[in-house]
Every structure is written in structure tokens, then in C-alpha cells.
Image 1 (cartoon, rainbow, N blue to C red):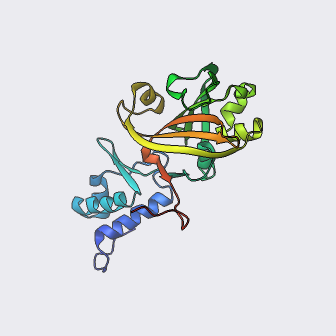
Image 2: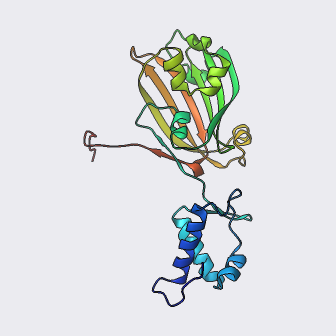
Image 3: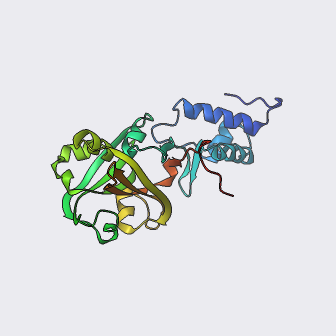
Length: 246
């Protein structure tokens, strides 16, 4: 596409629109990498300042992302996970059309970790522990560490690898969750988690902690998710029923 130099729309806005259209058509797949500023400047016969302004516009709109020392890339689809509904992370991702899968890293019976003893009932000393890596488009995006009530020992390896935690609890075990507490914090990635997620040690991660309960009030699962923030928006809906606090 040739830019129109006497158009009311500035050159950098025309360039941004052209690049956005090319990104949407998949021109830069599979790597997603855009040409360098110098290459774009030569192709469209504009200054590098104009190219930079166009890329700034696309970056502000989250259409591209700049990676230090690597160049500019088409931004990957941002995924949404609602915290105000009882839904598994895997199901939430898959329903947005992303290529989602899980790798089951650990699946074993063990003592309830000391930090979770207060979460479960006093008579629960053992749990079923699952550690799963969530993937989107062949990229690891979240590490989930889950403790379930010991009754979950009947769950098979194949079920634990293929189904979300909530799907396992409801469809396989027949349990009905009624509510859950969730909290979100930010941390620097511990070395072991960073290695699993393919990021540098101490890179920023979102930590989502979830504790779910059955109708009788018993805690049935507790999960800690370490999530790469560049792919996720965590959402909460607040309606007219919400209480205003001022």
C-alpha cells in the first residue's frame, strides 16, 4: 500500500493502519516479527521518526509489543479469566478459541503442605497434589499447583491431565462447589517457576490463589497459579448489587 502524502490523515496514522491490517491478515506469521524501523522506512519512503510514531500508536493499542534487543512483534491474543465465576482456567482459555493444553508434571498423594493446614478441616492431613503447566499456542503461560481432598485419589492420571480442576471435581467426583475465595498478587518469579514458564528468574508474574468450598462448607481444593501477565487480564464484574464503600 502506498501512503497518501496529501491526505488529511497523517503519514504515521496511515502507516499504523496499514501495519495493523497486515498483522490481522497474518502477513507476519508464524514468527510475528515486523520488519525493522529501517526496513519500514525504506519500504514506505518515510522517515524513521514517522515509523517510530506509527509503532508507538500500535504499541499503545496493544497491537504490537517491543522486545528489547529483538525487535517489534505482533502482540499475541490477550486472554481473559473472570474471577467472579467458578470456572477453571483451562476451560476459560479454551472457550476463547486459543489452542490450550495442559502438561501434568506431578500427581501424587502427600501430606498437606504446612502453609495450607489452616485452609482444610482439622482432620485433613493428607491431600492429592497436582502440578500442571498450562500452554497456549505451544507457549507455557501458567503453572498451577493444586491440593485436593484425599477422596480425589480415585481420579486417573489421564483425567487430571486433560480436565480442569473444577471439571474433575464436578464431573468425575460428583462434588458441587458453591463458592471460592480468590486473591491476586504480583511476585518476581522464583527460579523453579521461572524455568517451567520459560521466563527469566525474578520476572514479574501474577499469582492467583484460589480456595473452593463445597455446599457443606468444607474446603475441597486450594490452588496457586503463577501466571505470565503479558497474556492475561483477570476480570471482576461489579453490578448494582455491589455495596458501595466510601
